[in-house]
Length: 481
Image 1 (cartoon, one colour):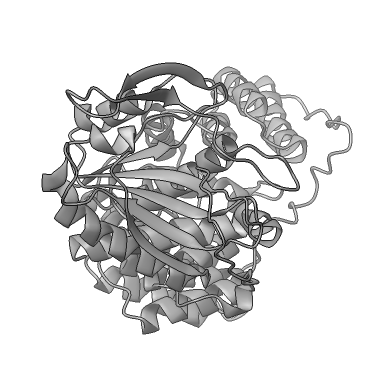
Image 2: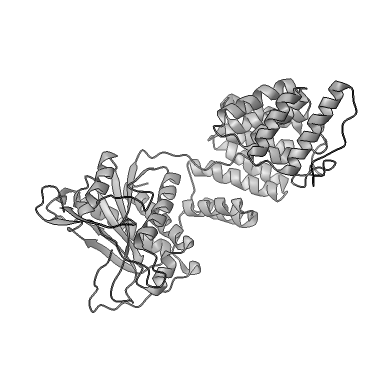
């Protein structure tokens, strides 16, 4: 959204990640999740600890403790891993997940009876919990209890929606253990189609061939898949710690990729606030210069949708930035438990500003957030502003008080999260997309694409993440959460 600033000159404020504003407990939690997924376990633990110190609560707490258990298990600090898994269980939330985590822990320690006990407790809590079904089925497979393993793994494949290569590989191994080698081969082919590794594929194929040879009374063929070493356990298998009790059950067969076949049930909170939030990524790839009323019953007409501004150095169009930020915001809001409705998720649309408000109205959204970037002739102009309708607005004056409250909450949180220049909340009554809305509505002007320093920030994924987190925190403040 482009605006002339006149003679006002504002020096650009350089941004540094090290100097950005405060982050919420939920933000630290999300950082920890991302670092865990990248294998940075020590850094992830530090983020989760910061989140706990900031008062992380509710559904996030059980997931934070669970992640910390995973981190310690990856670092082979087994006592700490068990401690945090037990702390997760003590929250009383997600018992199926917590019991499964403990089952995985004891299985990796070689305590199969304890592992079985926890898996069964998980299934008592939720008899369709996929990770518990899979983990218990694998345990039964590797301890020679195929008659118990097969139905569990068949159910896991059925309820998984889109089974992974691991699901099919687990079932293949169970069929082979039960002597059902033809079915084992079918499942193994499905596993390979789903990207199951060639090395682990060869290990299970070798096992199937051994079972076929036993059934025919012949010696197994020594041939193996090219490049695969079926005589050794894959490097991904986690060794049993030297401090763990010796397993009394049948050991895992040599070469079976047990650890890689057992999923770690890591899920992020699936909270629901009951609130619906509509997001409109401003503009689109192709402008529409036809006109429409600026508000319900208005005689004044404005073009349906303009082209917006663009990056001063990159020439990236505003519509592209708006969509990138909006999609990040969608994910962050859903992570926080909100239902999100998008007016567009592609540049290839033809939606007028009134039609965009119509999408929010049709969804009966609680609030409507319109995402834009700013532009100005003054190349030094920088910072964030949030627009809202005034109490004098001829179309949506009744929405002004709540819209102003939302605008202030979002602006404060955005500037805290990013350290950006605070340009304030601004009354605007000439915006079609605002004037057709039926709920509190704001326009976030996230920064100036015509300022070289700010353009660089706006187009970085890291800064977009901070912007999204800031908006979420503002929304939570608005709703009193």
